[in-house]
Length: 117
Image (cartoon, rainbow, N blue to C red; front, side):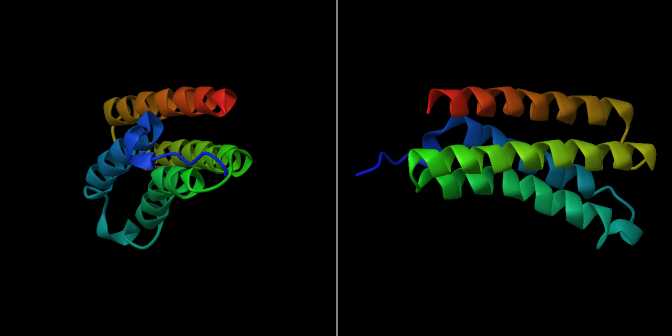
């Protein structure tokens, strides 16, 4: 039987969830015109980061690595969307740098986790 991971105990899942909560707070300040556009895209993307970790944790080691990879991809997508939000002046440079640092920390941790599988 393949080894399963309790995703709630995984630091990368916890960090992904923290990013999701931070992003949720950030997009609350976006203008209403973005409610169903960029903010929705950012929200869905951030949610996919811990969600893919959770989903992959119930699968084989090989599949779990794949789901971590998808999660990392979502994190790069999220940074891109936040760059767009910063350009549109929906977030400040300071807000962007703080969330970007957390996302990059997630990327390093998730890559290290992949390498350990």
